[in-house]
Image (cartoon, rainbow, N blue to C red):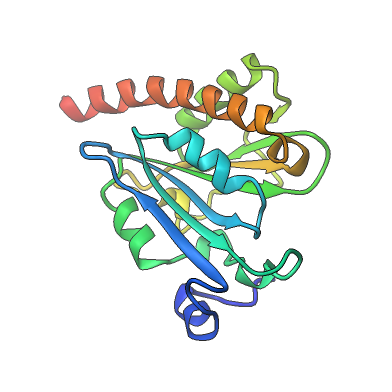
Length: 197
């Protein structure tokens, strides 16, 4: 269970710049948003992966815990209650939304979200890159309509839940980001062709 049920509750009790921070980038013309809602020391490594995926091409929103290690769990707002106003505003202008999370368990990447075509592209690209995946994850389905990954223009997005061993190693983070960027490129071609019709 999360301590806070909304960002407003968290902001009333925690200190911006001391307990948490927000990092964003918004390249002109991008309609893709990469989100790390539990970044920093909340789910270590997710901010780094999200940043590598976004690069200088896609929009980025990263909510990051800054407390001493082991004290950041309080900053975890569950994904269907994650309602940071700036994140919602960025999502409302994005055709493609992908969130990056951390999870427990043996080496694996769980894929969820309502955008099943994007999820399929992610599964194929990550599998080709050699990562063990759980497509259409039952443990982390990401199918709640208010899940932050599903708050974009099309009302559907995707999420990755990545085990700690893959998040902890720089080489794994970089390889995940490369595979995800490949899947996003294919998805963008499809989405833009539909929008153009």
